[in-house]
Length: 379
Ligand code: GLA
Image 1 (tube, rainbow, N blue to C red):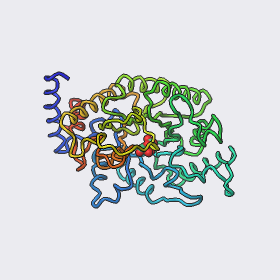
Image 2: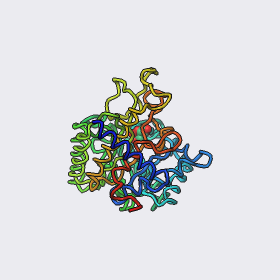
Image 3: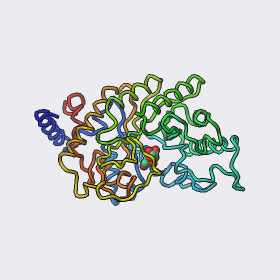
Image 4: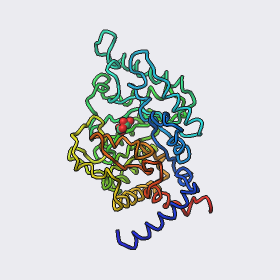
């Protein structure tokens, strides 16, 4: 970045900061009419005294996703046992604030209990029995939360690069598992609930091509799929903007909306085992202090780099706003981000737009700066 540009950015960020400090500009207003902006909510936010982070969410965002509580394991850990409380709280919050409420997730290989794939005697289910169990899950959620959801992640992370993962779902049901999952979701949910396929590393050309082919095949068979979710667990310098753009365009051309579903920017040094854009929750690495350099705060040059990175990314989203339905961050403040604990426990990361005290960071101002001329409420 040349010096003049850097100075302009810093001054501009300062002005946006002033406006925002006075609550004149919020993310949801800034991008109103372009795409929804939101956050994933963890259960802990509902238990904070005075709920300050939820207040921040209500002020800044207009779409929410449950971080964990509706995944199969936390929601329905044993046959017949349902933990409704967290999901009810989440849904009520979204409704109260008139938000675009996203369900996450019906079918995934992680955070799914083993009993799901077995009968009462512990034998592996047949294809038909597992399909029936899938339908029961969707049906019971559809009944309990009728009219409360606007979209659902139907299937999560079924591709490893360009190939279907050889996991229980595919092993028992077969290669048409994704098709069957979308058929069930379409049949059981109201027609105005958008159905999404969600995955990480969606800028990998092999995965991009595989997902585009899957979308086209489903559509050709008359199976409804409305959106593709690009998780967006990205890092400070990869993937490149052009790679993100190529995927947004490719998915839109396949005839679906693009949802940026789990955005966060990892600023910490990456271990060689972490591939860019990956979010394999099973990856666990040894503690290593050289991979945790910012325990006392993020240095200014990194803060600026993060602001620039977010501005570039949102600049791209704005350019393609006609293709993008929403942008959801995976968390609200840096304090609550899963990236403090993955893939190494106990690190101090800075991946989001709000700092540990819930204050907007330079990255937040840099994002708002992109739309100040269009949407500034004082104009
Ligand atoms: C994946 C899942 C999310 C979440 C994140 C990490 O991306 O889709 O539900 O588990 O990993 O927290």
